[in-house]
Image (cartoon, rainbow, N blue to C red; front, side, top):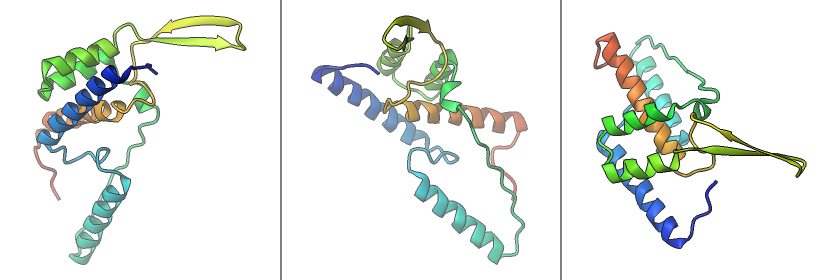
Length: 154
């Protein structure tokens, strides 16, 4: 994780806020990561109850994205941000954060090794879930487009 001074913290939080504002403009209907699990569960439970009351069959798919945050390809992430109109100055900051990323491995305070990595969002970073939502929004929109359906049939 980065160590930032107060000026860098202010700039960083400004970028996070701008990414969120841009994301809200796209109204991701199939993502709940930005509102929380409780609201997502409420919406799902309400929809299932309503469909059951009207005698409608319902099918759901739950996908466990194990290690999802670790597998995000950086160039793909940048393409998703660009696709959804993230301002160029924000893009530049995010690209700089993910340029030449290194994990420092130290074993029992003896051996130190730097490992370059090009996948994954930075764990523990407040921006990581937001970046992940952009990736998932691009993935689901791509899948919807490839299936040829803009709206699911019920």
